[in-house]
Length: 77
Image (cartoon, rainbow, N blue to C red):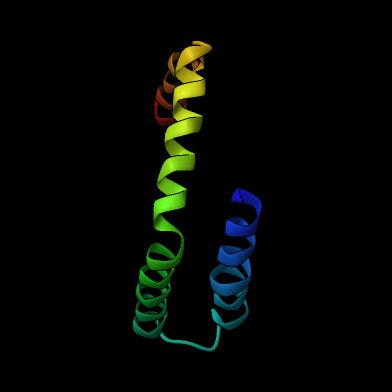
């Protein structure tokens, strides 16, 4: 299921956004991004939320959440 969500996001949002990035003004790009984000949330939001919770739980159960947080802090320093 997550694979098809990624494909939906990539094909419906990211790919066209990249292809049209030079053709649209900043305001048009922002409006497009907002519209696509709302569409993605409506179509995939619930499944994405469950997937994200599952991954975060698995990371925590394996002690990787602390390592990720440390890496994030190292990068931002």
